Image 1 (cartoon, rainbow, N blue to C red):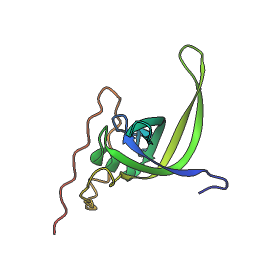
Image 2 (image 1 turned 45 degrees about the vertical axis):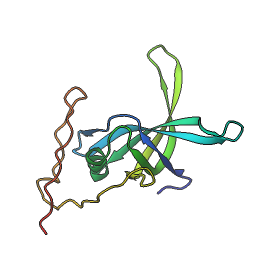
Image 3 (image 1 turned 90 degrees about the vertical axis):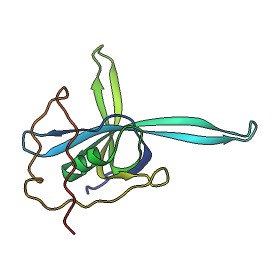
Image 4 (image 1 turned 135 degrees about the vertical axis):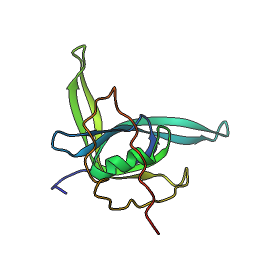
Length: 150
């Protein structure tokens, strides 16, 4: 943790496929988007209505990246905690844009919207090897680990 680091927790739904890549240094990392949408009760019409939406780009590293891809899919309810910041960039048309980025320390299902079965991976040295370097066109879901012997 750094001085004046801004950390937050986002609760929402996975809004994109979770893709895992391997850095040139051999570290696994993943990127995906999360949407958090407010729901408000409209007392005049006696109905729930959608409110403001927030899109956040999430990145995570190591086992967090691998396990996020193995455990979550687009549309799943999720909670993500980490360091938040903005990323300024220029679009293809030359327009300046800003995105909200969250460097995740923890990722997990939001159990208020689903149930989960927790499985701890075995410490198989083969499973701890970095994933092969991939490109977006060839990315495949990672295989699930074999269950640990009882």
